[in-house]
Amino acid sequence: MCGIAGVINRKKTVNVGEQMRLMLQGIKHRGPDSTGYAMYGTPLKTGFIMRFKVSENSAEKNGSSKSEDPSVLLDRKKQVDAIMKKHGAKILKQSSSTPYAFRYEFTYKSDDLEALAKDIETVQNTEILSIGKGLELIKDLGDATKVADQYGLNKFMGTHGIGHTRMATESDVDIKSAHPYWAFPYQDVAVVHNGQLTNYWGNRRILERNGYRFNSNCDSEIIAVYIADKMSKGIDLEKAMNDSLDELDGVFTYIVSTKNQLGMAKDHMAAKPMVIYESKDIVACASEEVAIRNIFPHEIITYDPYEAEVKVWQV
Amino acid sequence: MAGLEKKVTAFQDENLSGRSQKLFFEVTEEENFTYYGNHDVDFNKRTSIDCEGMDAKELNQKIKDALKKGYGSIVIKNPGAKHSLGVGILNKLNLIFEGSLGYFGLGCIDGPTVRINGRVGWSCAENMMSGKVVIENNAGSCFGAALRGGDLIVKGDAGARTGIDMKGGTILVGGNAGAYTGFMMQRGRIIVCGNVSANMGDSMYDGIIFVGGEPKSLGTDCIEGEMSDHEIKWLEQKIKNAEINCKVPASKFKKYVAGRMLWNYDNLEPAEKKGILG
Image (tube, rainbow over all chains, first blue to last red; front, side):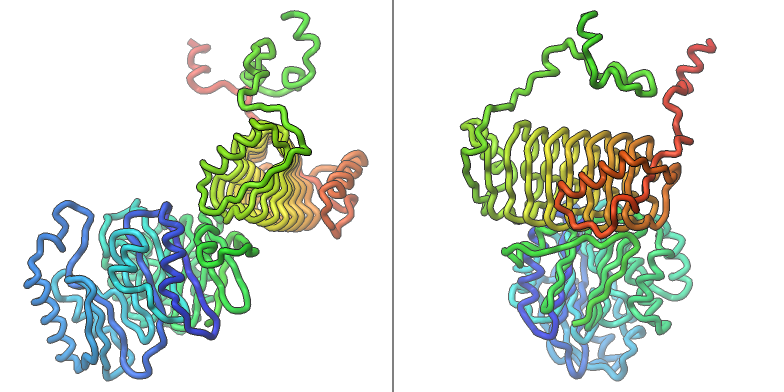
């Protein structure tokens, strides 16, 4: 029983970080283990934003982030810097909110980031959370407020975002199993999911044979990779999501975001909840209306999408 | 005991199939007729409760406290789509929510007349025994799950699995209803003025589904039945009473019932068969 939420502000930039924090805090009861955000700020004209971590934050007593020495983490960061230099990527800005998670702004010779991303992930325990022009993916253990405070999301200005509160059922309580998932290596695409996919391993083997990487054993990761695979073949988001209803098996509702779109899909059984509020200026969707009401204190008219329904909204 | 048996016209006179169902309700046991949370209330005695900042438990307790004081009309302000509001009310009562409810609202109620000027989330009026609930906007999935009696009316659309496992009462949907509407229903009636999504009436045991529009597909063992004049009159009256502006005349509604191919109530369980066969 995870909680998912998304919000898209049409044609205006607002404090979307605070919007998402309020929504996710409202559905904390659906998943207290970890919280994740995929936020879209004003897209960079040149270069990319990369969020990555060099160690794990696990709920186990001896989680690696606690046992690993800060100097080890620093050494891994240096290795990442070296790889980026080797590929000709130029780091313009860098910051970090925790000893293991970093935010880089960098320029690169082309839009094809696969080779660079794959090389960076050869560094031990290093995972790229996201790369994009506007996308910034943040996830960690704890509730929405804790993660937002930790990463300074309360003042994140942008147009749209998606988020997730996770109740771990299929895999561990750690960052790599937390949502959202970035559609590696497709820039600016992220996914959050509530449900279970029953043909995960079969589909994973097919996608792995096609060269895609999986970082966790979480079934939700496959939706991001699946969408990335479709989009790399030139299929648009809405069509890819419609295809997923037949090709992914199980009970699920998921939300996908790209640099200028937000989409949701619900399975054939309509087994997982989703409530949508649409107006001229804003669209908000969440597992429960109580999340939406955290950003709209007044009465609003909402609805549940039906089974096998796909919706995509533009910024 | 013998005299009582002849007077009983409710549960025990119904010709239910199966063995266990006839024995679940014993009229001679006094506790079956005692409501511990029941109070005499006056409908003209009114009060309102502002739900802002309150959790469900606190609000539900306040409603019960008001009932104890004899208030028969209660207005709830700012419900804010919170979960489990108004559950377990076993009284006659006029209850008005000025806003939307979250999940599991009005579960296990017996008697009140409730109006919700908003929307309801999943599993509204689950296990409702009697009374009337009217929702002005839409309803989520599992609307009226395991409903046992009373009228449950939504003027907008209802979600998937509307009336799942219902055992009595009437559900009236002014708009469309979702997939698996009437899933495993055992008794009662569902009226949908609009269309119904896939697998309507899947695995239904009994009961009737009336549809003004079209069902996308019928579930296992759900078949079209024949409407009687009596049923058309009943439908007309029911829709009129609910103040629903249905564009389809009652005579054009279609009726769906169980094909009863799945009926096997009286079959013995394998272990029982083994016992008999020795």
